[in-house]
Length: 296
Image (cartoon, rainbow, N blue to C red; front, side, top):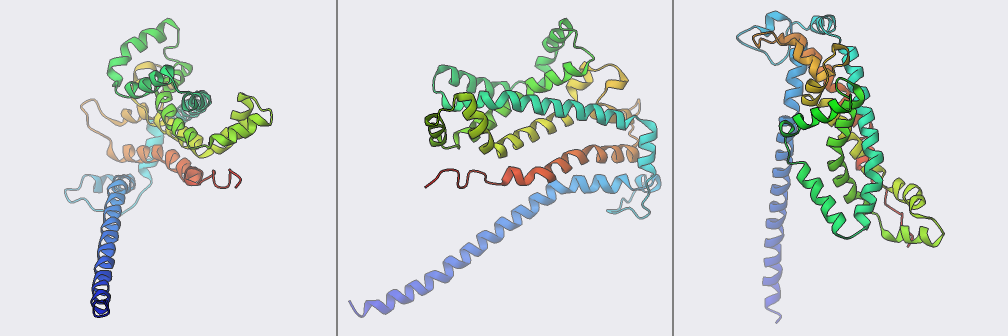
């Protein structure tokens, strides 16, 4: 037995550097893939920002440059002069905030019930959530238009908000159900022992622990409504009620020729609210608020 010990130590010594090199290679591959993905995501925004500051001479050049050689703010001035961007942004902000708030208020108690109740109703509701995401906009726009027409909600902001709420609610439910299931049921049982009812338990115990999920769901509903174009184009006819994505199409000419500089400037301004909202609340999304919730 004694002569075999040195061979075992030498074999282990040879194995450790090999495993360490494998881990380093895997980590390097992960970082490389992550860097490539970040470049893939960030390049369109950087190119849009560069185009927004380029003068017409550089925009029409046969040899485009990465950065503007002679930066200018004329594209932003022209964009605000040609189209009512502030009014359109206010319309989009109103629709997005209202849709996000209503979707969260409706989805939170419903997700609580679906996550805690097991039965055919919960299974059917989950199936509806999955199936509803498979329908394209084109299939539902005609019956949706007829329903809103009978309700006299065509060309109105409440009608558009109602559509946004209905469209984002299934995915919001799907997100919140997963967060509710991550909340320990022992907390609800302890609240019941203390005499709290279902509503009190949901508001005082479960809802605070669902803060990351509620914030993520609200962010999803907000961005979905802010960027939505098709429903706003079909349902809103008055120029004063049009949202920002619809107004951006006005920078396109009759033959499809785009006023590239002002369009890039307006499109960059349209992306800022989503970026700022995400930058402000991203810690709430990633922060773990369940740590220490259950007493040992």
